[in-house]
Amino acid sequence: MKIFVTGATGMIGTGVVAELRGAGHRVLGLARSEAAAAALARMGAEVHAGDLTKPDTLVEGARACDGAIHLGFVMDFQDLPGAFATDRRAIEALGSAFAGSRRPLVFTTGTLVLPAGRIGTEDDDGDLAASAGFRVPAENLALAWADRGVHVSVVRPAPTVHGPRDHHGFMPMLIAAARKAGSSGYVGDGSNRWPAVHHDDCARVYRLALERAAERARYHAVGEEGVAMRQVAEAIGRRLGVPAVSLSPAEAEARFGPFLGPLVASDNPVSTALTRQRLDWAPAHPGLIADLEAAHCYARN
Ligand SMILES: NC(=O)c1ccc[n+]([C@@H]2O[C@H](COP(=O)([O-])OP(=O)(O)OC[C@H]3O[C@@H](n4cnc5c(N)ncnc54)[C@H](OP(=O)(O)O)[C@@H]3O)[C@@H](O)[C@H]2O)c1
Image 1 (cartoon, helix red, strand yellow):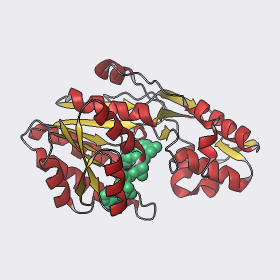
Image 2 (tube, rainbow, N blue to C red; image 1 turned 120 degrees about the vertical axis):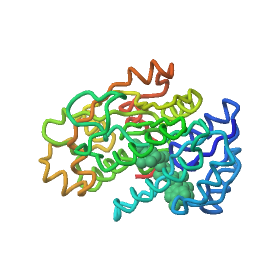
Image 3 (tube, helix red, strand yellow; image 1 turned 180 degrees about the vertical axis):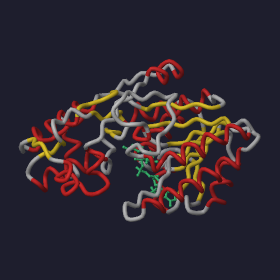
Image 4 (cartoon, protein in one colour; image 1 turned 90 degrees about the horizontal axis):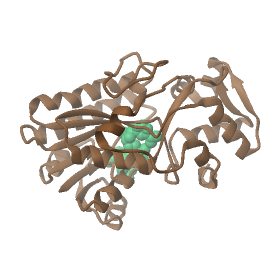
């Protein structure tokens, strides 16, 4: 199949392109710059010039393909409402391109759309009150295309997608904050859990979701269902040679900022039983703590 991929040059997208090509698919990647086009060519993908902020370019790219995976995201911490509005417009454009065609379209949200404090499953709807509740409208918008003749899947990656290509996710942010503060922080007793996944295990979920082409499905790209944040802070502290310390929620917000601070305190255990069963998938790459003990996590921070 020929697959249109937005975000193909990103951390997860790079792995998805390799997965798709390894399984014999052709990839048409969205590129908004010459640098992105060159990167796609190096990966063996074809290039579609366009931009997430120009929905027509997304329609054109998708219409040239048998399926699509949407991973591109305009991450703007100064204007998160604007970023999510752009994402919703992109979802509408991609859905409209495939309306009535029964072609597979895979979208992206995250496990932080699930209610905190209890194990969330793939069959649980997103909760507007969750840590990433702001992403729930996009998930619902995406799934609604299943009623209009599109085979829609939503992949929810763990908030911690880790591995050698991760230079900008939450772990590099925690590492940078620990370096700056001289201590590695967790909130309260640090027993709150975040799920985690290696970026290449995550990429395989996307490829399998696309190939399964269910009429309407949600999957969890999660290798470890819940790693205690105290363990994370201790692993970072060991590597940096700084102590792991307990912070109050207010201290966490002062240290990590208004976006990441509350997330560091959140408890987001999730199940992957349905993803494993429906996609015959299991993680094969190192877990989060093993990764945090490797030099690559600290090379650019
Ligand atoms: N990383 C995580 O830990 C994590 C966890 C949960 C969910 N997610 C979600 O998974 C998705 C992919 O994450 P990621 O970490 O792989 O992202 P990433 O590495 O930041 O890559 C973002 C991608 O979006 C593209 N992009 C940004 N603005 C664009 C624009 N205006 N027009 C066209 N392309 C544009 C970038 O292209 P350029 O090469 O041109 O910059 C890049 O390919 C996102 O929706 C993210 O929120 C990620």
